[in-house]
Length: 120
Image 1 (tube, rainbow, N blue to C red):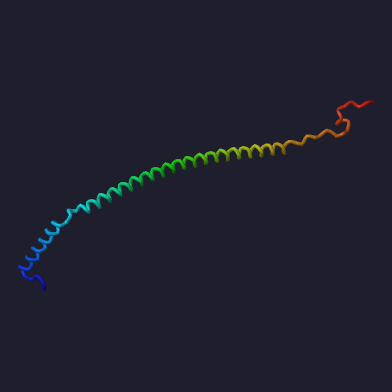
Image 2 (cartoon, one colour):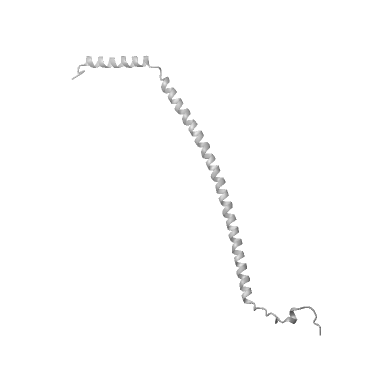
């Protein structure tokens, strides 16, 4: 088995510490990750702004659409009321026409049709 004595474990631990120090010494300081993070943060902020703008525009369009639909429904209700009133008036006139007896026409003879006086 590897590293069974205390001396070997201390040497392993010392090599680990030396490796970490060497790795940190040659690392660029994390600037790459910071730049990536900042770019991602800026892209996300830009996305949120554009999405919020589109959402507001969509809501405004929906409000206008809903207002127009309400206007059209009100106009349709008014025209339906006018049609119903006209149908009721026509039905009432037809019922009144059926209820009154027909007027008798005067006899149609040639004397009554010609308004000129006849020579005697």
